[in-house]
Image (cartoon, rainbow, N blue to C red; front, side):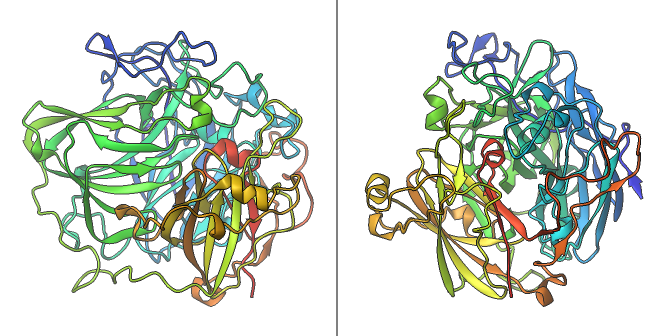
Length: 593
């Protein structure tokens, strides 16, 4: 068993807010600190911290503790309260797994104090004052094809002094995944505080070793970049709140950060050799979608996304990435002369509802500086799938055997803020869940009846993106009115589409587990729901919500961990804007026989 120690764990992932100084001047499009409806980070000089390289651990058995820590996000900030996986100060290390070899993680909750204890909204999902100090956690392997009892169900929680052994079969193709907290109604608080890390799955094609069959960079020329946005305070603490409009202790609905954080540092700089690099990007933010590009407009290649490699590298100058999505890039820094720099930047503005109170887009994440040394000089691969020594091609999208409509909406209730978020106009504990049949190909028409984009994530399965179409939401809602919250509403969008279907973006043509659903539109995806024989486990098995207690003195009030009694069953699907997931854009679903 390999235990993650303070000596091996570097700072993890974060993000933030603030006016940004570049060479003594502020970003022209940076935050306006005169805006009274927003909190702001202090002015911080960019590119003064070195990019932390995440430690990469390779074992079949781990012990991972969730701990309280102190972390400094910037050279000019003191350490502030955070959470971490391991004995480090923020985030977690990269865990390497191998296809066909089970990974076992003995997880323990050792949290002493939560950085956002005053921000717990005790009106959500049965949360109580107890949860501020007796913090609930649940680890989820995002993108993992995992038995339901090991999937990090939001109701299967571990409190301080308790834990659980997660077993991941790793039977899927090589890809970039991530592990993060998934506890009911506090996912946004736990993950933002630091409970997130990268999980790399290797296979016989994508070995991660020099001389791998795909001819891809490896070792020091493969980097994981965990991107976040944050608001930080001058005392080094993080802020989960973006506006004084919402009182502390109330769910906000989404906080836009004003500083970019990569691997736990605000606007770091990375020195790179002049050659090809494989960059594994993860959008681990709580709220924002980013349209990413390099400041010099240089070309790069997309190798794959959440479900693994594409058939061939896709050349592009931009890629759009929402919370929960990962993208695997090939970048040629040989295009830069020695000591020349290039920035990874974002052009996407904040969602409309955030912009209404003054949020502006966060423009940059990090800067790369070219060394004189030559790096990886192999060619850009022509193919990644198909042909001798390569995995099979992705293939065409399968014809659906069943089509279902599902909806995203923002109903209101009497509270501050008034809006909540909803799937199918239902709340999480509804029994009116989707129940696709095992062995069936289904098309889901995800109808977004809101003015904001939402990244939708399905646990267990990967899917293909068919495309997107704008809809006349007002006309649709006039003819298919939305009932009061709690009554299922899945309107048919087809009579109200106002454009021909736009196919997936070039980088979205492979398998995915999270998809951006644009405002006032229908996003169509096709998923296959595998059988128990194909999976090697029963995806519809019931399982206990109980976890084990390793320290009875710290385990709160008894061994029971949930807010309800009885066994659990199935998986969840939800918006990966974590504030939306917490209230209430998450539903259970089952795959039945």
